[in-house]
Image (cartoon, rainbow, N blue to C red):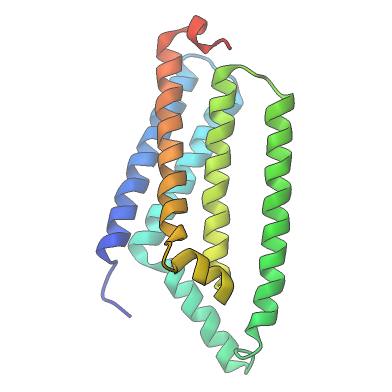
Length: 186
């Protein structure tokens, strides 16, 4: 166990801080311009998500939880059979994440097509991708680990990509609000 967070964890925490700041800015602009109440709620929820991710990176709690789970499994003599349990949990996460993705796609396609509404919905989707990634990292199944941490480093791409997507969408939301109602129309 290390004495503190790694340089990469600190860099990720810095990115999360920028994303949280962008979400706060988007929430503030949304409230001031009297946008739909759910817009502000979504930006605040995304702020809280990225503050939580930041705290997890800085404190190393994700690794601590994973190590504690392994210790419990070893103490109960179930560590060797963990793959079966992890497979079940992975299947549940995949089904739930897939179901949420389908539901969100349906809501986006059936809901308001206003540009600002779509921007907020896409930001929510990127935030949910971060939650799904976190769930995949907690499962720690060998096949998932080899995808996330293997030579392609999909963990980095998904983490950085979803974070930058939320940050970019927050900035775009602020820009749309500042530009006025004509720009926000589809």
